[in-house]
Image 1 (cartoon, helix red, strand yellow):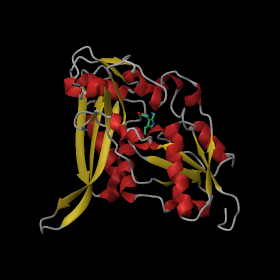
Image 2 (cartoon, rainbow, N blue to C red):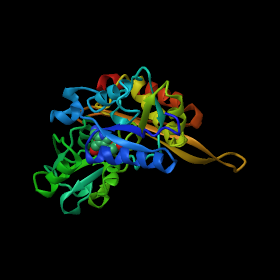
Image 3 (cartoon, protein in one colour):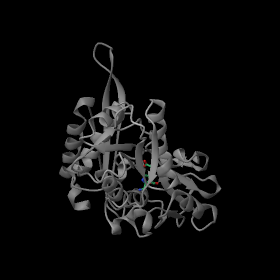
Length: 311
Ligand SMILES: NCc1[nH]cc(CCC(=O)O)c1CC(=O)O
């Protein structure tokens, strides 16, 4: 992969509009930096099955793409970071975590309604146990309905009147240009997003040194710190992307005793009983360089408060 190579960098992606848009931003970033690049569409188990993700297993969206990378069929893989299993993949490295899109969940409700305007019995579509559990814990009497398929078909269930509302990642709607349909961006105080929601993982082979350094230019250190902290919570709780666990880290500004402004990492996390009957929440703030440790510390606190019993 030398710079004089006529071969474009091949970027493996799922074929959905969301996936190709996400991978397209990486392709465009590489081209703008002078590195020809193209997308290669790869079918994954998650695209071929309509079953709930909890049933078909972790990694349904990523395994086939990682295989193509390992087999040298593509040079780069672009994943929604939250879909990646917590275990590292031998021989591969996340060479870039670009600046994150809005991590919050979004309500898309008929009639422009916000969450507080939905009446008991209103139907809300989501298949993520994390979203279902947090919605139930609000005590609004909402009827949670299973929901899968691409973003377009999910939103279509509100437009057609089949559901009163759906909850999806706001980042997905922003990326496909449908932010207008969001009726409420859910406050993380009520609904903590999935660890790494809204972030991309740009992966390549660990021994492809030149590509590792090219991709590093797309990395956003603040996003990387946030993702490290959020994923450390998930790893320490030995849970995956379908567990009822929310986590959100943000780089925040603080003021020291001498009035100087400095930045640190603020991390919140929750473990919720699937039926919404109980929720444990905790928060921590500390140096950005200690992102992973902060995540582990917060997980330990959640475990002290009984998280294992809820999982
Ligand atoms: N699990 C599917 C998935 N993976 C990534 C996104 C959206 C984009 C993102 O969170 O980065 C979605 C859709 C959703 O959760 O609504």
